[in-house]
Length: 166
Image (tube, rainbow, N blue to C red; front, side, top):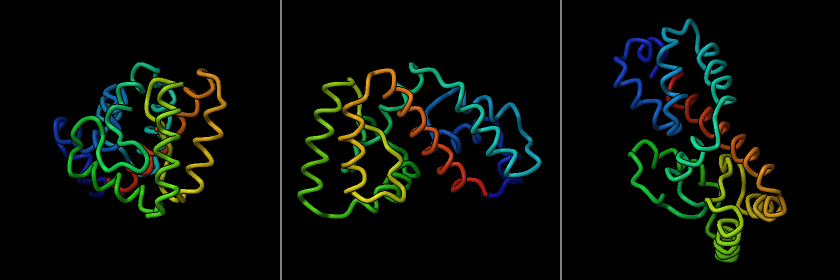
């Protein structure tokens, strides 16, 4: 949809459109409240600034809405739009069974260490690159990893927002 259409949505419709970008209510509500936007750049800047305020509790809840890298389904049911986003983002993963297995093992080790799924902006990354990242991030402290997850989730949300509203 274009910016004019987004600005004219009622709050419930705008909420649904933004929820497919990221399941963080404070982010969605803040963007809705700041409408109308004069330009898409203003919308994107507002969204990026709001993402900097996310708390770990909000991020943790949002992680439940994401499938593991290499998996097609999240722990909860995704909307059709979220499924489309996820499939497109993971398209570079490829069908290499060795990479798939290594990612599966990396996901298990990651979840055991950090207690949540491994989240990475998959768009534009190959399976090999994502595998290298999971292995690198397994060395992180909890605090550093939470910072990296926040950055990755923000990148994902903004990419999706740019695809949703142009």
